Image 1 (tube, helix red, strand yellow):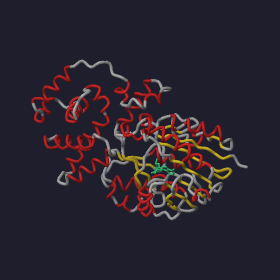
Image 2 (cartoon, rainbow, N blue to C red):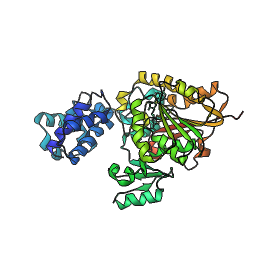
Image 3 (tube, rainbow, N blue to C red):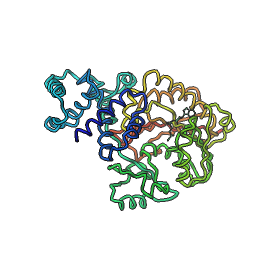
Image 4 (tube, helix red, strand yellow):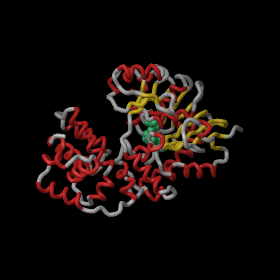
Amino acid sequence: MTPFQFEQAHQALQAILPLTYPADVSLSHYFRNHPALGAQDRNFIAESVFGVLRHRLWLEWRAPDATPRQLLLAYMRLVRSLPQRELAPLLSEADTAWLTALLAAAPTEQPLIARAELPDWVLPHLKDMPEADIVALGRGLREPAPLDLRVNTLKSTREQALAALQQAGWQAEPTPFSPLGIRMPGKPAINRHPLFLEGGVEVQDEGSQLLGLLLAPKRHDMVVDFCAGAGGKTLLLGALMASQGRVYAFDVSEKRINNLKPRLKRSGLSNVHPQLIAHENDSRIKRLQGKIDKVLVDAPCSGLGTLRRNPDLKWRQSEASLQDLLQRQASILESAARLVKPGGRLVYATCSILPDENQLQITRFLQSHPAFRVVPVSSLLPQVPQQGDYLQLYPHVHATDGFFAAVLERVPD
Ligand SMILES: C[S@@+](CC[C@H](N)C(=O)[O-])C[C@H]1O[C@@H](n2cnc3c(N)ncnc32)[C@H](O)[C@@H]1O
């Protein structure tokens, strides 16, 4: 670390910390405004800024009134364990005095917020979980995520893709649970490799792949991806159907639907039909009622299962935003369920770890929809450990993002 890099990381952190915008968006903005920064500088800055965000609750407990610069120094010294002599060239006299006092202060007993690195608005929602499990979960969510790819079976097999990636000199290994997944621990810049450019692989967390596998669409099915976004799961569904049948990709966000289009082109799929909708009761949805074989609801959620990638969500979400999401999830589920034909399947999924967004939504839905029954995930994905009726994935157990999914079947008439 050079003094220049440290100062850049400090300035970037200062720019990002108000968290008015997502941290990755603010950081890209910072890099655009500093075009002279080299690749190594950028890596250092990104790792430092995200490192502080990952450990911010613990750092703020150790140093409650720390400025962004002090947070960065405390992170380097206490989390990264850099020796004082390595930091010395960066330190003013005031910095040295501050760090010395911090190191000398006897820490008080750590509250759960600091131990688990989960904010106070989240903890009441995990009240039924033992404290040791909350800490293990929070720490799993604190670690950086690896890069996972999904093989596009329309263009490649996993074996072929693995061979091509390894030939490029990268570490690449099959994921344990998804037969389509490849894990790349070194997170190389895959987006310039021909395999990616030609649509042979897509970036997709292994957990996200499992959600598509749970829907298990058949070749000639009519499928709705109700909250398709930029199509992470849509593309998988289309490929599972070997580009046959029909997949409607709905979303209320024009930007996300537009982001789906280049990915769709690269994938070579011709069975996906993206459609912008105004809301979950849009007339384009109503005309499909009772006609769809498989419906995926990848509901808008707090995203807390993705804290490995987006640690800033701890501050960008709140109790109020959660309450709003809970209502939207229930309303979307209600509307999506009307599409399912008798004997058809609905998968409700989130990338959240909160029971309110997950099993409690399903319990409430089932109480008022006797035509639906649960298909136990343990019977559909026996290779994934620790599963029961619902899919529950955790970084510290499964090395995926945190995900939830319930598979519901509409009882045949
Ligand atoms: C978890 S994201 C979907 C991610 C996407 N399925 C993927 O795998 O990349 C949730 C999506 O729901 C969309 N959304 C929010 N409200 C909606 C609604 N009422 N109807 C349909 N989609 C909605 C959001 O725009 C967002 O793209």
